[in-house]
Amino acid sequence: MVSRIKIVGMIGAISIMYSCASNEFTTSSGVKVSYIKKGAPTDSVANTNQIMSLNIKWVIEKNNKELFNTSKNGIPMGIQCDTTMQKNLGKLYDVFSLLKKGDSVSFSLTAEDFYEKTIQSPLPDSVVKTDFIKFYVGVENILSREEFQQKQEAFYQQQRKKEQEMAQEMNIKDGVTIDEYLKQQNITAQTTPSQLRYVITKEGTGEKASAGKRVLVHYSGYLLDGTKFDASYDRNEPFEFILGAQQVITGWDEGIALLNKGAKATLYIPSGLGYGSRGAGGVIPPNAILKFDVELLEIK
Figure 1 (cartoon, rainbow, N blue to C red):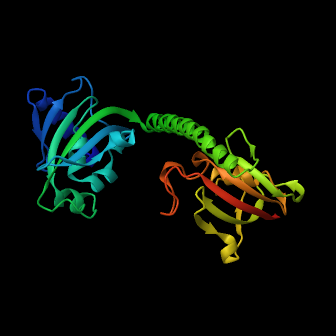
Figure 2 (tube, rainbow, N blue to C red; figure 1 turned 90 degrees about the horizontal axis):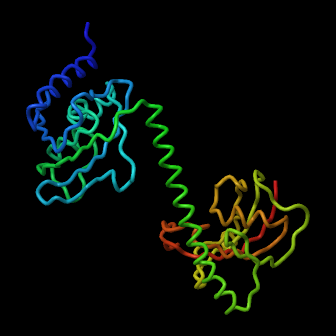
């Protein structure tokens, strides 16, 4: 008995052979697909053990308004050609399963067919059921699962490196602003290599807090203009977390590690060690420099 997957592969082979003499083809579910570019005739469609690395964009056809684009994320979408994807993606899968490396195509589905019937998602505010959604799909590569995971990890490592470099540049810039503020306030602070500024206002006792320890901290948090955005003192509820476990912003992980039990300090945190370009909770703007008065109550 021929399996469903093998049937899909056979249909793909027939369609691709036909498309060599045409710039269009129609899937078994009735989707009309136009080639923008064709891959090498010797390449084959993906099998069930492979991942298709796809660049995808879709727009509202009537006004060309872009709704999604993988290029904005910087990484292609991975689709495995198996029965699960066939069930989840429906007509989209029917198109994907017929493509080979290097192929670029365009096709359209109604908004109702795509959002409600295929990906089972509410319609975007700017879209109505009868709108046509136009898709542009390019097959960057067909890879094994291991190869695809390696490419993803390499991409994320590169992204993390870029983010770290950008954060360090912002920290240096913020450090100049912090130093100007400290000078105006006649405050002398110490500076770490990461550009954190800190002033110990009360010495504690014993060893300093270290990574992996559970610490209990009282705090008041301010923007550099003096706006208070949060304070455990106001709630009489100290904050507990594991130091160095990335449960808090980097400036806290670094700053609290400078203290021992009972110590008090003021931390001046560049945005790259805080919430960066994303800000937080609607009360901390993007790229905000933060000031925290902290008190290390306990080290457990």
